[in-house]
Structures are given as C-alpha cells and as structure tokens.
Amino acid sequence: MLFVIGFGLAAGVVVPLLWAFRTTRARFYTREALWPARRALWIRLATEVMTSGLLTVSAVGMLWQRPWAGAVHVLALGMLLYSLLRSLGDSVVRPRWAVIVLTGTLFGGIVSSLVLLGRAGLVIA
Image (cartoon, rainbow, N blue to C red; front, side, top):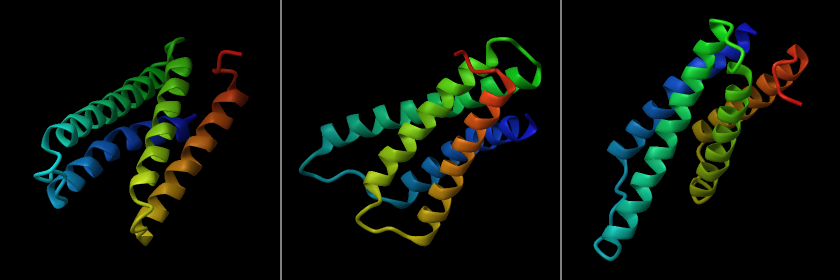
C-alpha cells in the first residue's frame, strides 16, 4: 500500500507543478480566440487542480486508514487517467522524450495502483 499512497501523493504534487511550468513557458492565447481559449484553459486548470487535490486527500486518507479512501482513490486515479489521455492529445503535434517518459511513468503508476488496490480489497466491487 505504500506504493499506492506514495504515487497518489507524488502525482498530487507533480500535476500542478507541471501545469505551472507549462503555463509560464507557452503562449496559450491568440488574438483570434481570446475568450474561448481562456475559458477552456481555466476549466482545464480547475479540473487538474481538483484531480491533484483528490489524489492528495485520498492518499492521506489511505495513510490514516479511512474506509472511504480506497474508493475515492480509484475515482482520483480515473480522473488522472482521463487527464493524462487528454494531455496526450495536446502533445501529439510535438512529442518530446520527456512527455513520453512522464506519460509512461504516470500510466504505469495508475495501472499498478489499481491492481494493488484491487488485491488489497479496497476497491468497491
């Protein structure tokens, strides 16, 4: 279970840091599409922050052995998987080795966490 807790905490911290790095380095707004681009970006940032917050809260709940934490962590991992697949669609144009390594690491962590949660019986069946 330490892997699941550690992965949840690490992903909960890394995801907002990646977005902070990404938003400071890239130009998201063009003159042609100011309002739709800003609105889509803010919605996306809000979902990323909610995902990382839920991952962190559920990992701490699992650390404190709360009964609700396993189910919430599965939900948070599903949110992270959706976010990962959505971000892959954005980076298809210029795939970099760092994106490929990070994607593989996150995907492997998600699958491993789900398998470990299922074996421990913390997933609602």
